[in-house]
Structure formats: structure tokens, C-alpha cells
Length: 307
Ligand code: GLU
Image (spheres, helix red, strand yellow):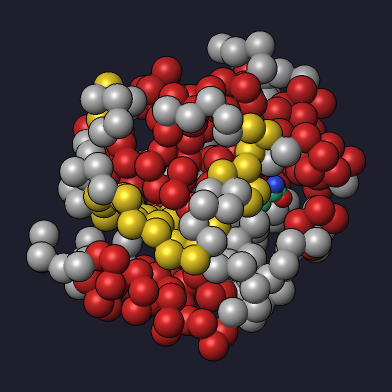
């Protein structure tokens, strides 16, 4: 690790993107998300020796949305090991996160755990082990951050659930192929609640540190997944974590990441640190527009890359 002043790095990154604050489009298909001020910007960096660096709105909580898929997968992977791959693949989809077309061609078997169809299968796996999978995910996160106040935004969850027609269609579709064991309504409800967990950049960076640390949670010194699983979750983030723009993200940033339509992007620097950026305006692929600009600059300054 280079000896750099991370405080200054984050300041530089924030100054670089400041002229662009408010750029992009906030997600509008979940009404409460449309109300979020697009000018927020926060970034946090958590190093494996336990230091936290922040800038801007790094302590303000936002809807983690698809970033929750990383935590849900981690629980399922730890429970089932490689058996999780009996029901889903690990290839980038090249289609939007909520696409139905590919599912039909591939007989109800999702391309990867980070597109919606795959995430629904992961929830279904959890639903066979926990009465309330969304609470299992929330408690898992609370434990990782050592913060009991992390919670689900119920208003947002209900709002998404009411408008979840496409995800419901996808779930029924997979069920028709025998790739969903629990009732569709239960899986959808858990999924929407899991997506509505609210966290800050600082909390997300801390929560994900086990992925940079060969599966060991650095705040608790406990094993969350094994080292091979941590490596593979990172590989899935690198190849499938930023919707169908994962290639461009790899080119511009070069680090494993998972984004969500709430405007957050969680990043892993294996062996070194985790980072999270939040700016609610999204680009055409659904990734935070200013967030990617910030991460591109951040990767440039630190020289961190897995490639
Ligand atoms: N709850 C969102 C959905 O399924 C998650 C989308 C996302 O963040 O990619 O539509």
C-alpha cells in the first residue's frame, strides 16, 4: 500500500466532482426515491487497519437497493457453498437488471446473483432457511457494522412492493421453471424490504470490509465467508456488479463494485480497503453518474486496481 494521505485524497475527489453535483437522473420508478435531492454527495473509505475517512454526506443514510444483493449472496454462499450455483449462473447478463427476455431463453435460470432474477433466487434460498430473510439480511449487516440502529425504510419498501409488477412477473416465470421454492408474494416482499435497508457510505464501507479481508470481518475478527468465497463474490462484483455497464466500469475504475438505484456504489480493494460513494443522480445504465466520476478519479489518485 502506498503511503498516501487518504483524508486529502477524498477531499481532492470531492473537489473534482463538485461542479457535477446534481447531474444524472434520480430513480423515479420507486416514488420515494424520486424525492431524494440529487445534489447529495458522500464518500467513505475504510482501511483494513480500521481507519475511516469520509467526505461530504458520508454519514447520511440512503436506500442501499441493489447493494443489498451482495450481503444476501454472502449469507446464501456461506450457508450452501457451491450449491448456490445449482440454481443460478455467474455470467454478466448484458441486459438490464430487470430484463425478462434472457430468462425465457435460459429456462428460468438467472445469469448471475446481482440481476433481479438472480437476487430473487438468492432471497428464495434464504427463505428456505429463515422465516424473514429481509430481517436476516438486516441483522447480518447490523452485526458487520456493530450498529443496531440500521433499519429498513418501511415506507419505501411498501411503495416498491406495490409497484413490483415486473419483479413479480419474473418470480412467477422462474417458479414455472421450478426455480423458486417459496411463494412468490413472500419472496417479493422480502426482496423489496431487503432493498429498502437504509445505510450511509461510512456504514456500507465498514460492512463490506470482510470482502477486502479474505472473508474476515475486521470489526469483529469473525469469519463471514471463507477466503475463496470472498474472492468469488469480488469477482462477481467486478463482472456483474454495475448492471450492463460492468465492462465500462472495469475500464474506468478497475475495482470490484456493486451499485444500487439509490445512487450508492460499494467498492472493494482486496487486501487494502473498502469504499462507498453516494450521489443519487444515475446515468443511463442506472449507476450513480457522479459516483462513477468520483471513483474513476479515486482509482487514478490511489493507483488501486485489480487489473
Ligand atoms: N429494488 C430495485 C428493483 O428491483 C433494485 C434495483 C437496483 O438497485 O438495481 O427494481
